[in-house]
Amino acid sequence: MPTCSSANSDARAELSAELARQREQSEEKLRSLDATAGRRAEALAVENKALRRALAEAERKLEAVAEMERSLLEQVPEAAPEAPPRP
Image (cartoon, rainbow, N blue to C red; front, side, top):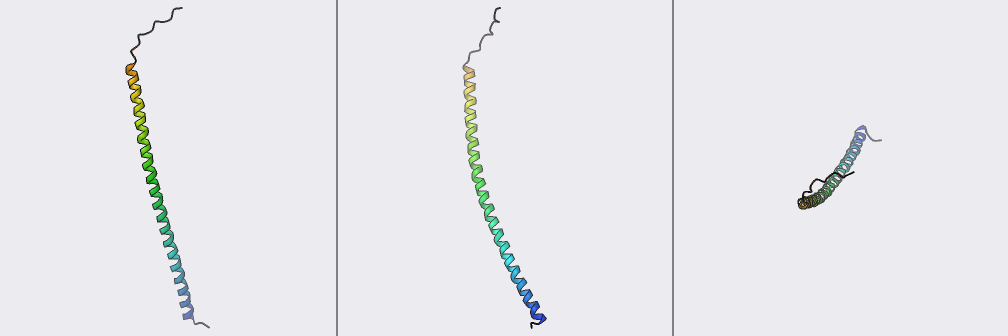
């Protein structure tokens, strides 16, 4: 029959081993979460860069359209006011 001291020692050893397993699992989970967050941050940076390029292109096109409109408006001669139609 184990002595009280031996039982306490065994229980402490089991608890210590369980604590070590849990600590390792926690550290592995944190490493995994860090890696996932890093990949997500990279993906968002790439997406952000693409969106900024698309926005710049859209702004260039919008400015080109606005410039065409200004040019067309400058070419239209000012029309004389029309006389009201006769009854």
